[in-house]
Length: 220
Image (cartoon, rainbow, N blue to C red; front, top):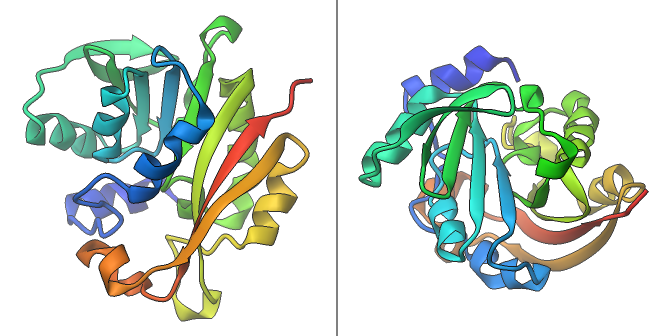
């Protein structure tokens, strides 16, 4: 999607993708990655997600990347945090303790081999991208991930004719087709979103299948 699309969404507060609680699939399955507390974790297209605070609570060092500076500023202000300005991976950002959120194009993030991430958490990045951008996105993930790194990926699947994304439907066979050459794939759970499980912010997705995968990078 064009950058202006997302800037407008945040300026107009059309952010139905934002959840007011930690995603249950994160708290349920993150431990399946068996990461040390000191692991470095990347959250692409992070918005102002509360999932970042939960990951920090596990002892991880966390880097989020978000296009909208408004979203980043809102995250810090709503959580009572006073960050300092920083520069990392070629992007400007804000940092407090073990948390850094970088502002700008995710595809512009670059890290040295020794600074690659142990894990990536993707709840709302892949499903926000149209098909033409998904392979480039996966290439970028691979460039940022350690050879033994992992991804916890959350997707949605629904009849595409029911709604125009984002979020976009990513069926199971597409996950297998796009990731299998670089990752071993384990599907951990799939559930139908109901009024109880979806929450008020995602009522438009009732009936969609939400799935979570553990992806383990295949070393070259």
